[in-house]
Image (tube, rainbow, N blue to C red; front, side, top):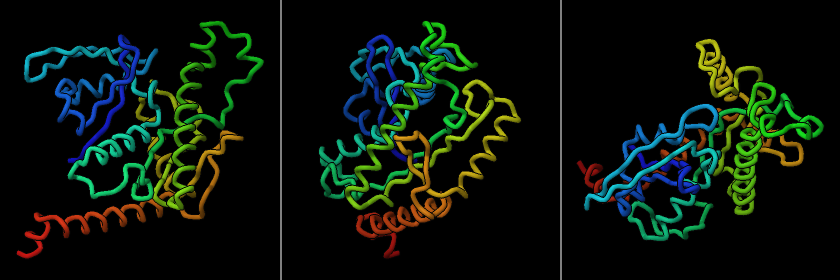
Amino acid sequence: MTNIVIPTFDIKLLQPIIFSSYQVKTNPSTDALLSDISIGTSAAPTYLPAHYFETKDPSGKVRGFNLIDGGVAANNPTLVAMSEVSKEITQKNPDFFPIAPMDYGRFLVLSLGTGTAKSEEKYDADEAAKWGILGWLTSDNSTPIVDVFTEASADMVDLHISTVFQALHSEENYLRIQDDTLTRALPSLDVATKENLENLVKVGEKLLKKPVSRVNLDTGVFEPADEMTNEKALIKMAKLLSREKHLRDSRSPVGKAAASK
């Protein structure tokens, strides 16, 4: 239904692997089953096993992938998506109108977080100073080393994109929705009970009513950046997308032919 970009990490090559609808046209070795890519990109270390699969290009050449969670490379994949679009613009992809590759003022970005437990303040320096290898892997029923890398990666991407859009006076074109007040089992990757999943739905419903927020790197907390709620911001963004689609349809040969019938 749409183009997608999925970051993964190849544990054998020790480098990120990006699967993209655009890239597969010029790099057939990345033409893999979506099921294999999905299993690979969700194989979070310490939670799920790494995933191996192979692809074969038209010439018969086999390529193997040894994948783990794409979050180790891009826990917040927003920049990956924006970079992929910029690359296609640079390569004159006809799907895009003639704009500069870095003209982020023309981008419309929705970034959805999966929730964090920052408000619990689970760790501190005195405690971490006593950890050895096992402590960094298994403390307070969690994996501190994973928490540290994933949170840092996600927040830095959010900060970078927020700064760029604000500098271009296009902050309304970037919407980040995240909840950093999850507690108990809610943020756990391995608690898929009916009760916990239903509670996550409730968190999402409440999040719609909260004001649009951005992370404050001084405090690490998401703070209201606008009086508008996430729900109203989503509706506004949907209207912009709809208007843009109608505009593009009216300009395309296919759209003009449909309108004349």
